[in-house]
Image 1 (tube, one colour):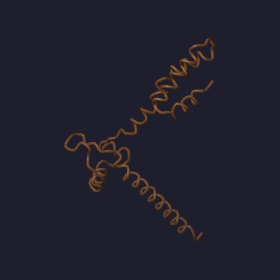
Image 2 (tube, rainbow, N blue to C red):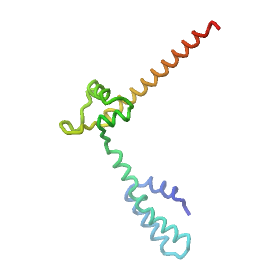
Image 3 (cartoon, one colour):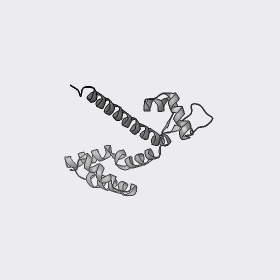
Image 4 (cartoon, rainbow, N blue to C red):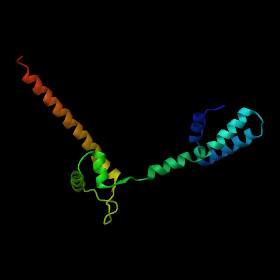
Length: 144
């Protein structure tokens, strides 16, 4: 018989209607026998029904979910102060999604662009700092 992973991969490639048709077909075909393996397979299908039929729908719904964070959560995520977050929001002209309400919430998608460029820039600055420090150390001991 098929493994759980194989069953999931087969069902994931089908449309919603075809998933239901295949599921019903498999249940009907394998329910009519008394063979132990086929009975176990039917039980497995019944246990996996929700995953087999509705797994992709949940994924597509999650893709449309937006993530909203407060200034405090943004600062914790980036590892910088709330005041620095406020400066970034003002500089980048990022508006809250719930303007006029408290707490102010910001769409993570609007902030991601700055966040990743900030992290990249921050890493480059650290590399430059350590590179300069290494050169200074070499120059300091070059006379030895």
